[in-house]
Figure 1 (cartoon, rainbow, N blue to C red):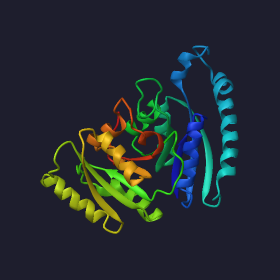
Figure 2: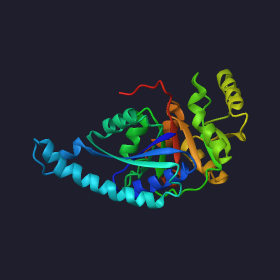
Figure 3: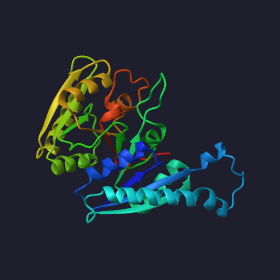
Figure 4: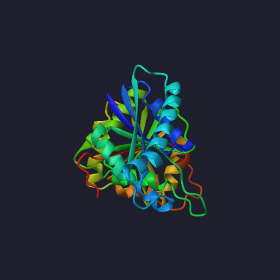
Length: 286
């Protein structure tokens, strides 16, 4: 039984992520925990008293939030087509956002987080919103990131960008193997270099390890040359009709360039293709 965390701020963006996650895990036995974190930092922008009693907190924040969660739960139950496999629970946390996420992950033994993201508006658009960025960089849990315009399709074409810098623990890739098996998907292992592709000894060795690891699943290696990694990913996702992009958080070379460059310009994969960000179990965050 998988435990899935669904953070919500009651926006349509978070609702889109919830609907995607339910479809994505439709045939899996899952406990879904729908979490709303009322952040302590929000107090600074409200007219609430500086010192709140527990009764004040209940009246001002907790009770209205629980009512919203109850209505959201009713909406979700109507949506779920696989009620015998899915259990739904609501949680309200009064905490700093990341602390609330971490607490719930530990208490409920969460396997995956599924959350929506909406880039900031304005001339300097960013790839992902700040809450989602904080989760995937500061929380040790595999996270399915659902962009604002993503609609669920069976992930038949899965991209895995890599520079062939692997850790000793290939188990971090297990969720990818599970997806390939469950959806009968094809894995596209993508290597991007800024100049002519010449793999060094370690890269060649790690490529062979990947080939062995995914030996029982359809997979192909692809090589692109482009000075901008994000442009290469854009080109590849369009040409191959990619349904899901998987990344290892510790692979900072690709991870940061694909998700954290500041200008999106003509990059559209951030608005319509989900990302699965994988974390090693022994990672530490501050």
